[in-house]
Image (tube, rainbow, N blue to C red; front, side, top):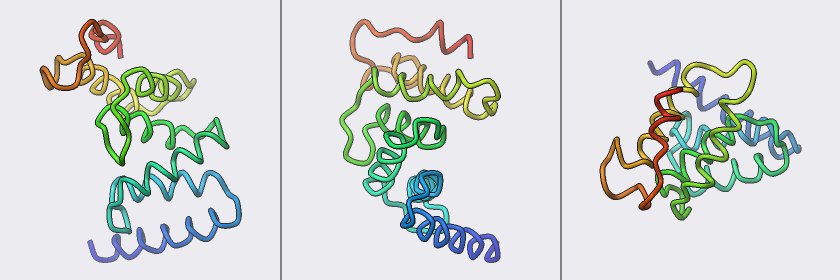
Length: 137
């Protein structure tokens, strides 16, 4: 386990170096690391800042969009909760031709959450029902 932690810390260090040289994929990966706490101390505000820049500058980066959608759904990293933005970012991920199965599952769970069917009440604005689409995924 310690070896894996060291590997993740080194990976994050290398992502930071590459991101400082303008590599947007590295910037997105660094944001994912900060979001999950992989190799660095978890920092949701920094994660959101990094993936936002990456998603805007490199529209093809799916990791950045997935994290951003997740954060909009859960009001993480200083973001206001936004069903529309959450669905927008996460849907662009699952509509890709070779989407990983875990991305489809995360999208479905997020749709359930924002529909108020997974965590009833707090998350879903009145009138938003994404249940049929969640069941599809």
